[in-house]
Image (cartoon, rainbow, N blue to C red; front, side):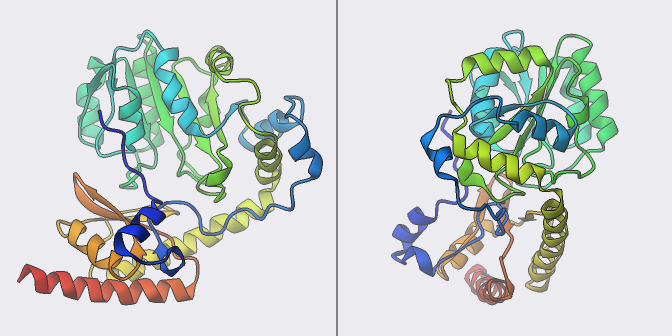
Length: 336
C-alpha cells in the first residue's frame, strides 16, 4: 500500500508552480494559524535530557481527567498499535478518513465501509477492531457519543478494540471518550498539533488502560519525547485560560470560513473548528486554479473534495475570497 499524502507540502507546490514559498497562502492543513505562545526555551531544557518526574503526567491528568502516555506525535502510536494488539486480525476503517490508519493496518485484513453509522453497524460484528477519526479528517463527520460507546461495548465484549483518533477535537469539547479509557478495549489519541497549533513539536498522547500504555512505553526509545516538547506541553496543557480564548477564536474563524466558501458558490459539506470540507466533482480543477493563484488547499479524489484550513486574518480571508471567485469562474468556463 502506497504511503498516504498529507497537506502542508508547501515547498513541493512552490517548486511545481515556480513561485517563492513566501508568496503562498497555505490553507492545506487543519493546524490552527494561532499557535500557543510559548516563551523562550530555558537553556537547561536544551542542555539536559528529559526526566519522567518533570510534572507532565500530573498536568495531563489535570487537563483530561485521565492518565496518558506521551509519545513523539500520535503517528508513533498509530504505527505501533498493530504490533501491540496481536489478537486483532480484521480491522474496520471507514472511508474516507486519515490515510495513515489504514496504512498502519495494511498487513491485516482491512474491512472498508462508508463513513456512516449504518455501514459501520452492518460490518462491526465481522471485525476485531474499529478505527475512527472523530471528528473525521477530511469530512468533519461526527457520531453521537452514545453510538461510540455502544460500538466500544460490542467490540470489548468479545475482546475487540475501538481506536479513536481525536486529533481535531478541541479540549473540553463534547464527544470525547477520553474519560472512559480506563476500560478494556479502548484507545484514544490526542495531539498538540491542531488546536494548539504546535504540529512541529511532535507531541501526542495515548489514552488507554494501563497495560497497553505500559506495552507501548516499552516499545518507545528512551527519551522518545524530547525535553523541549515535554516542557512546552506542560505549559500548553496547563493554560486553561488560553484554551478558552482559543476555542472562541477558532469557532468564530470556522464560521467565517464557511460563510466565505458559501458566498463563492461552494456548499460546505462538513465543518470543524479547524477546517471546512467541500465535496465537489470540480475538486481537482478548483485546487489547480487556486494553486495558480499561490493558494494551497488539500485536494482529495475519493470522494472528490477540498479541505480548507482557517485563514489567519482579514487579509488572508480577502485573498481567499478573491481567489475563489476567480477559480470558480475559470473552472466554469473550462467545463463549457
